[in-house]
Image (cartoon, rainbow, N blue to C red; front, side):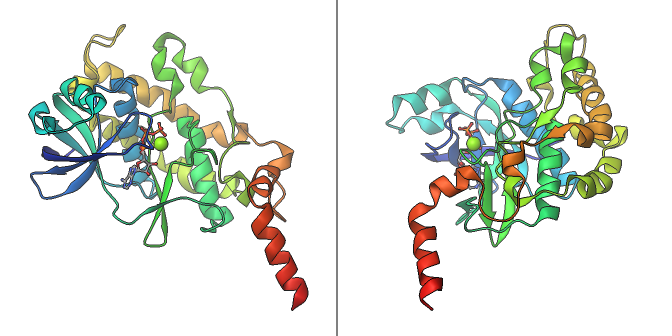
Length: 281
Ligand SMILES: Nc1ncnc2c1ncn2[C@@H]1O[C@H](COP(=O)(O)OP(=O)(O)OP(=O)(O)O)[C@@H](O)[C@H]1O
Ligand SMILES: [Mg+2]
């Protein structure tokens, strides 16, 4: 079960996020990034955040602590933005909170040097959960106190949007060409050897037990919330064992010497300057 807290003050919206998450204070004196059940993306986004976030934590990857957050929409009454008002009104009850990392900065491949071992763990994990949202356009990683933190696992496990075809969908490959860490040369084999054995039925059962019942109830085709939890386990367990064999990366992102095309495009002024500088010395 997730620890539960109650929201006491809506501080400000995080406009970078498509789902309009907010910074919210809670009765435990913590500050959280709150993700709302009333957001357009729906409650499955929150289920994915819990399943994948808890799984990542158990595998030793850094993900901010997750909590359940009770919301009484009345705390947003003074909020001037009608979009925020609507979101709060639609989200009374249990929502998701994630420890706010104060002073963290968005991942920038020029400012944080991931090594192939760390990149391998992240890419392997993203392949397992079929994360399509860790590209350089939207890295969904933060750097905090010099370490890499993973956030935003809402757009993962595509199979949970169509359970009857879930097994087949979960057997599909993962194309990591667009992954923000692909250019680092992720050591997928080492990550798979280290992490795949940890993804056991017991672990997945524990992780899915953390998903609140109210986000799983009345799922079409299932007669209990535990049956839905079981479906997540059954999709992820076989995928963990073999997904490393089905991670594809286009050749152009593989070379580790020099920036890949997309990074070079972002760099011209700075890299030109650096080159000239080193030539002058
Ligand atoms: N735990 C956190 N600590 C500090 N800042 C955070 C945290 N979580 C999210 N943020 C900030 O809020 C932004 C939006 O968060 P997030 O990506 O989780 O939202 P989203 O609505 O799912 O976004 P997306 O548009 O990618 O779907 C992040 O890019 C980051 O800048
Ligand atoms: Mg995001």
